[in-house]
Image (cartoon, rainbow, N blue to C red; front, side, top):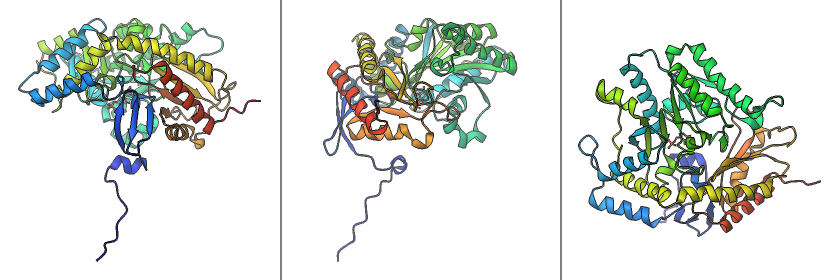
Length: 452
Ligand code: PMP
């Protein structure tokens, strides 16, 4: 008897939400290929993850060797050569004083570790009232509850609000939209940084544990650096009130902005920093929280143990992959390449979109660049959110074989949609041309230039 064939159903939850997605078959350099053989230029490294490109032989070899030796040994019983060497390597290349490393499996986990470390630190040093976190309205720190509570992405937070710890949000540093015509850039930076001081005083200094920020904002603003001097003022304010400064470099770290850590370009050192994405470059899920020695010391000399942990922290295969990645970034010169190719990308974007009536701002650092899209260049009016510009550009680009990362504006619906570009650092000049050409065609599909 003939059986009627049911249509194929995907049991993958996320795919059911995302709709019809092609099946990825293989990766090679800056390209991904789906099952039908269609080629996609990975212009955003997924979400600023694949900094080395796909199928890097050195990372694959390091992982294979580690898997053959031992794939897993719990950190409650063993350390591993890979995890030790990775921590040494990170500390050797990190901003001054960040000399303790806590390895986890991703960005949100690393943020949770940072928040809990800050809290435990203040208990250890006899300031147990400090527990409040201040962040910025235009920020994303992850999707676990502590990270979500800290972040300022209202769309992501809203359904879970009753579950979230209290946190405060000050203005982002967003000169394109918020700098007043009568103030210079430095005065603008100081004004928005000073909101941190006002918020600390409003909450009561003895209540505040940490300020958390992305040095270059990623998902919620598309490669948005602060103006010069902003982070130095933030550092001063944190020091004045004994508040810990946590820098979230999950997206902008690991060479993405042209230096291994984005904070190097701000001339400051945080108390705690958090990295992920580019650390594993997509080869393994891994993140890290790094802290100043004095924070570690307070715990080591106090209760003796950080009251935190996850089963897969310090996973040997993830550590081996990340060690190979960081070695290529530093000794292999790929961070420098990110800076150099970033200049090429910026130049090409300016040439292509500098006069585009719907591109209001072109910004970023290194190979972390974004376009902000506007309905009207002069007034900077954003597109109506009902137009779903970001989603349509993602689709149009994908159809043309380009992966880019468009996001809708996120503050009160008043901010522009943007497109984030974060290609692998191995990208060549001709591949940058291909990226910019395809993006121009995708923009033209959705928001034609309509030249007079
Ligand atoms: N912080 C920032 C700045 C991020 O961009 C992200 C991820 N987009 C996270 C934290 C969370 O990282 P993950 O998705 O690995 O949990």
